[in-house]
Length: 210
Image 1 (tube, one colour):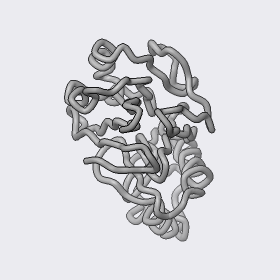
Image 2 (cartoon, one colour):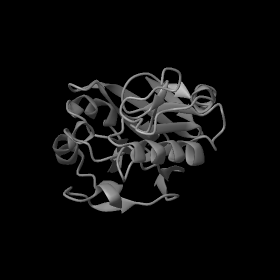
Image 3 (cartoon, helix red, strand yellow):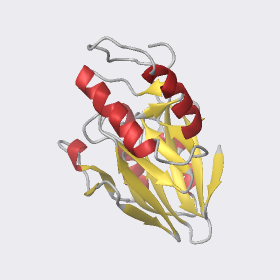
């Protein structure tokens, strides 16, 4: 699936690998420059979408193996450097790190980094125009899975502070599954926020069902 966003185009490639991951190619069709977001298993299926493009970097939304399993294929075929947030860089062969608010140039456009910890300490989302690649931070119907209640609260704060500040029309492109919008997520979250929850709530939380 392909989207157009303020001079950049975004291609969604997936589902890939045993966990049905999505990978994304963000590129400037005029200048033929691109970045790849996430490298799950079966990343060789991303390669046809890179033909004729100069890949400036491979951006990893977070350190979990299902978003990293195809990194060797992409690195070998593109020669591109690999980047993630510093809090998720330990033990990974990265070329550099990405910080909150940093803008990554892609041709004549930019991709903005939003640090959204909770699912992992270094989870990031990437904003290309009005398209948000959300990794495992935000999905249709709820936040990404968390292991501890403190992680869930941190993730919700990340979503409320950084993602819900975006226009309602912003299209959310998650690390797995279907798309949503910020407007739909905000409406669903309002239901969640209107209810009381046990203090140990974490795991697979949904806005409407939890």
